[in-house]
Length: 242
Length: 354
Image 1 (tube, rainbow over the protein chains, first blue to last red):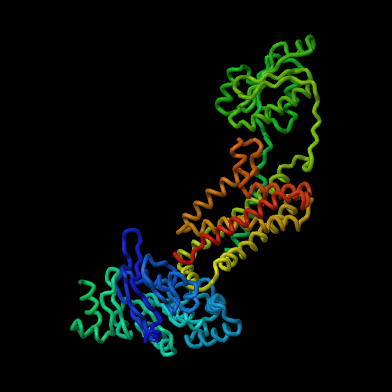
Image 2 (cartoon, rainbow over the protein chains, first blue to last red):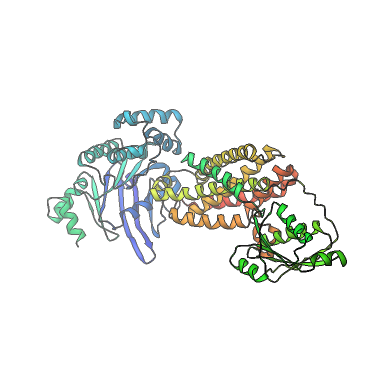
């Protein structure tokens, strides 16, 4: 059971001056699950995630991601995870294919591997017609799907998604979640933050962060039972309003 | 963007090289002739014949002349005393009064030299007295002839002197601004965060950032040298490979500074401001426009840390004097040291984890 936890967090804290952004959070994420990381704006989700992906050093507390310590082995963590930020972060002035090649190269994939990956990825996303167009000219929904696929290019064990569906239409969101399920079926652990409570229903387990603390952590079904409501929205409102 | 990077600096090179001349020409020259003899007219005629002076008018009196100088209508006023011709013939010597507008001290200095030269060529025993409006010391009449012999730039062509320097300046500015904006721009658009979650090594990242700008810098040098040769006909005496060797190391220094700035700033405005701060200091203390020897001691020490100074020196040495590898070795080694330090700082200051 213990080995099944790919993310282990114990008392993780981040302070900016006097302000405690993340206040001693503790949780585990099991291998292969879709873990929803919920919270209002400013609750500390992004800060917590940044510590887990090794770009922000915790003020105190411990966490391991894929067996590596976030305090001492951030670079090893980076090899085994994928990350998609809430801001679109591929290069707008490179083409779809160039972006794939570039990030494949950074993760140290061989040329042949990059080529075959790019072909599969472009085919899956239906981007054949725009493969040689600049990414900046694509609609946001397409960009987000591309960004997600690129974050999976090196077959990471865990993928971190920071509000991946912010600002995209419901159909694209639906397609996006299909991509997430697919990755999950292939054994990738998905750690996702979101504002959309309907999306929370798609997760295996969700945690809800309020003011830097995790106030609830369970399956959506159990959370609804516990708060005696029939959707996640109400669970969230009850918690966030205290 | 790429056309802008190449076209604008080259236009600057062409414009600035023509504009930045230290020659003082078209000096507005007026006189007060109290003598009205053939000798005094001949002296005025001497000034008229000179290409440096635009002889305006006889002001008639000192008062009119000084009013004209106050109004900025005249730069130099020559006062020829009464009995000028008589004294010159009888006593073999006499004095002339010269008033020079010395607001621009450097120009005034040159003007007084021009006046003295013309007067002495007119008559060896004429003494030029500088009047109160100028701060310059009195120029003593001398009977010693100096025969200047100018080396390396025989015709004293300022373009020959300035073009290599301005080329240096442009290569520096473009590479500094491009690299200074670069990482901070990625911070702004968010791609840097994406890079930071990849296992890329810091040194790989910095090298990846340096390389394109390094190529652009060398490309600029190439086009600039072609223009220097074709348009300004600047002699390129020394070895081109040596110039490229030095420049390739030099650009690394500037790029290192740029990336260092970029790492320390959060917005492009901040980076721009700091890059501008350094460019102005580097340029004005480079010896490009003003000789370093005339700076105060402390400023001379500061220039030791100015990479542009070495680049200007090396370009002028190699292009105009044909200096070889051993001649520029001190500059080369110092530049190499700067390159190592600055790029070391750039790698160090780039933090993947905050």
